[in-house]
Image 1 (cartoon, rainbow, N blue to C red):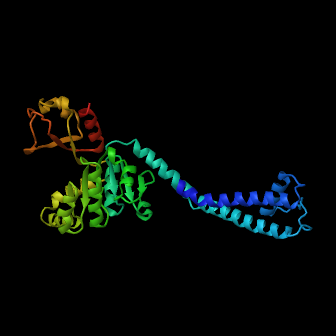
Image 2 (cartoon, one colour; image 1 turned 180 degrees about the vertical axis):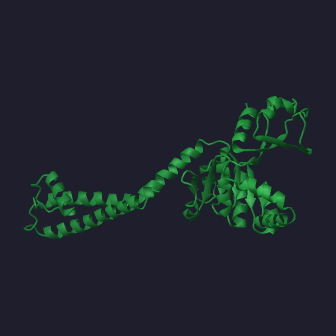
Image 3 (cartoon, rainbow, N blue to C red; image 1 turned 90 degrees about the vertical axis):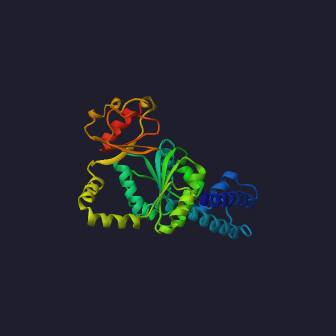
Length: 333
């Protein structure tokens, strides 16, 4: 906001100087016979070109008209500059943009365990769509307004360089659960991953990589996982050829925007540690199917009710977004 108003500061300061000079100048030219208020009034009607008439006769005073012309030209130019810039400021939407940024930052500071999407291209857009559908909080960071304009008006986004720590701080990285570095530049994604990990070591970072030879470098920079769209695309096309039924099932699950099923993961509350899986009463959730449990020893598919829950277990489900919310709330109590 201060940057936006900074352009008016010097112009207003100069206008004040012109008014002060005009007031004392006309007071001096009148031989101190006119009051300061009359001199101030004379200055204002000269600058604003109101033209009610000269209450101080400068025509008979040496250099009086020259002084009036200088005050008029200086004041009119400065006043016009302020007026045109203020009009452009309002019409151009800069004030609205400034308040939107402040409102966004205020909302972000209240968010916990949200996600930060660095990059608003096609990959960033698809991530945002999925997070919206599964009712997860997130904020988008990008240097350009062009890509950001494609998102829903309710989506929070911050215009800035995601490689800068102040920008990530505005995005609430201290309270974030994860960050997606999905710009179109591998080097940029590498620096974002490094910066994010330096600011919060336990933050989960997923990075996009176009060139497969850069994957190891981005991982060394701090990314927990690096995804190559071209590699995934090739595997997807091969799967379409050799296992079309499976691909159809997965596509239907991911592309359906009307509350389709998702593969989700949830950690149980510590009150369940050491208890059998049956204590979770998963049978009462019709929209949830437990597929597997992941821990340090690997995956346990279709675990039975007598499975004992441990602290490093992550439960993997197939469920609807609504079902996930109900189960997450139940397991987190």
